[in-house]
Length: 102
Image 1 (cartoon, rainbow, N blue to C red):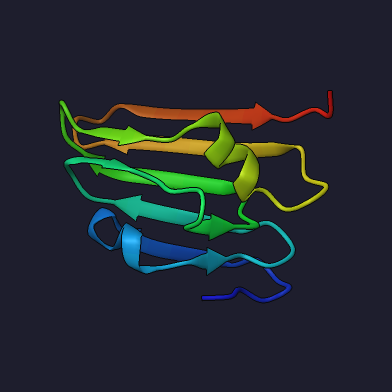
Image 2 (tube, rainbow, N blue to C red):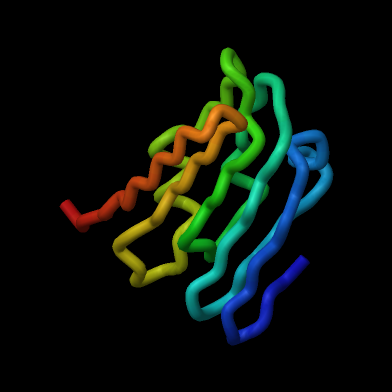
């Protein structure tokens, strides 16, 4: 799935992570993931996204995301990525990661 030059947002369940590739295109784009269980995100799944919103996690669920995943998802020239996590117990966490050329 390829987004447009505008703002794009894609909603996806954890169970479909291995079967979709989303390219947000230009502008500020995001992906919303929901589901339960333990899973890892491949850096080949998303491209050109700046926001990832994760919902529906239960106590003990695990979602593995590496720094390499985050840095490879953002659009060339962008320097930040926002990760939001909301679990079923009402815990809400939002972090923005900033990337710098070394």
